[in-house]
Length: 402
Image (cartoon, rainbow, N blue to C red; front, side, top):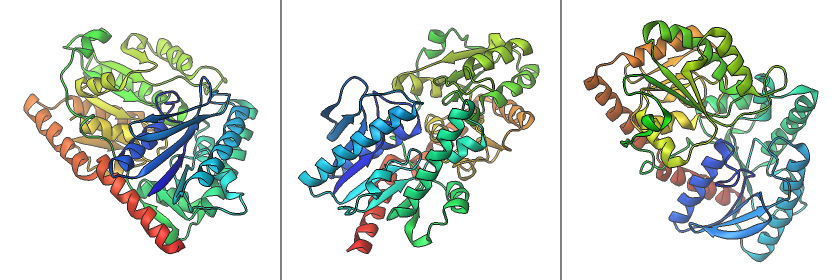
């Protein structure tokens, strides 16, 4: 099968968020099954084409700014031109685009589409609007327009893939996709990469072994809920006074005042007297992130909204207990208060209680948690399983289109 993935975010140049991780894993999984895969993504330096692990990567566009509407328009136009050239040169069976950025919008406008379109849903612009993850009136109107384009593209697609039951239920209230055109396919990770490992990562970060370590990973923005975690920190500190909290993720201009969200968190922490407990890491190489997942005592996903929440699965694959809000895939992760805790969205008291509970088990119990969480991921969320499910979606769509 010959497949084209449209995704502005693609590692390593534009590893901005979940879309990059998801498409990178899927592209390699499809190639591993013997299929030909093209990825059209954002260029950072200059446009180029190259092979990466068997994947044909086409980097296009001249403006890599992440939050710029002009940059997104430039990329979309260049991506459409590149896609037309690929379609003319090769027998492409499937074109797939990310829902978030309406990747397939211009392709849907084509009078003659040569291959059916699959839309892969993640969080959408409407979710960013709901959680106020934008800055100023300009950010508001950009997201409103992008939300309209994303919804229209999904409604025109041959298949719409939802990555969790939560995501399907939530988006269907707005999209009203026919059940015959919808598929629920949980995401997967490479369980050979994400696994328990030993390292000196704590020492490298300056965190003593006797200090409990709580980790969260995600772009710094209101939707990811780091500010809710910060409200929980003083409560946790009353029970575990030397706990350290590591926040891994790039900053964004989404503070209430329109400035840096990280700076806003720091100011709040200073006012609350716990700034010395926080450690920010803007970017961490994958190998180091796996070490940190393995070294932390608890992983926290405090999001106000997630379509999936892949980082929770990554942490579980590394044997770590998880405290997560009831969004995305979290309700399906079998967190039953022994291996992790599911808490209400936006509730710092419940979040703190969950963290305290997961910091309390004995060493023997921690080993049992690690083994159970690892098994849950291996059985339900491996990249091999995800790839096979996506291939079934493609095959069903091609059969329906013939």
